[in-house]
Image (cartoon, rainbow, N blue to C red; front, side):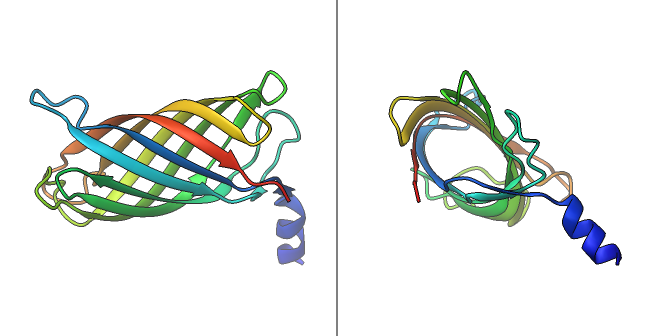
Length: 162
């Protein structure tokens, strides 16, 4: 019975999946020359806890970050898109966890890391958006040292229609 009530409480929202690519600067707040970064991020079209208003619900998401110094991070988590002005504007926070390999880039204390992101985008067509994203990667204090990385990117998103 509890499982049925839980399933009823977790409303499933259906929307189109979205793929976002971005390019920008890794280690934005460093006092030295920043490194180029590229990201790719996929957000599912299915979500939970859809409020039926501007809140698009929590949606499963995966992402991949690479930089010019060989760092790579793959992560999985959730995104929570909020849309305004008839869907033209979207604010999308995302959170996840994954594995970080530093290459010749910044040490983050170990291979396990957390990813926080915020993408603000504007619809420029029926299926596409342009935006700005800010990303934060750190180990959340699970290792002895907890350095972090902040990034800023220009993004382009493609929304798949069914």
